[in-house]
Image (cartoon, rainbow, N blue to C red):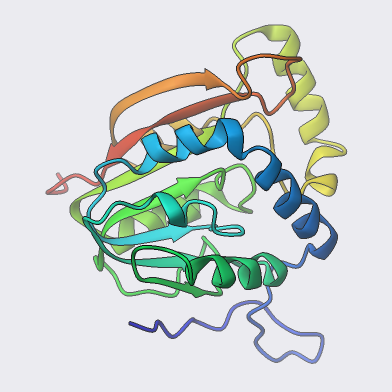
Length: 231
């Protein structure tokens, strides 16, 4: 089912524009690096998506490397990707997926879909780069049906003071500029709790497990739910 995206952002002439995010150089770098990382990322993607079912919204689909790991219990994936170069790559990837995937433009802060329309939302290295985490998670909550599930794999703050200081330094200087708005040390779990999601099982992990530690090496993989009834 096609989804008509909301018009977001403004052009120089004041007209609405769907291209609210434009990082063509980073997009090409990301597409190449993500493919190289698949030997150790594929198992993470499988774990992230294992058992997910029904209608799924993937926010920030990138070049679509999750698509191959959606199980047959998924009836449809609507994949939101704001960056044009990555969106074109994702549409190519979607053609090889085993489940129906519709790739559309949009941003996390204004998801171009109806409220309570999805059984699950997938966030895979997304909260690190959105402009407004709280607003993005409010949108995720809006589009999930009551009791719907969030599957997330995100960067998190490092456990040690030294690396946390490094994360803070790079996040306030070069890292977002070089890597498409990415912040290495945001508190993804705290943000989900603040958005009133019920956290399920999760685990912290290093990516990759071996080798030098980078600001983005510290990650969390897990689930959360929209409460069935708001108190």
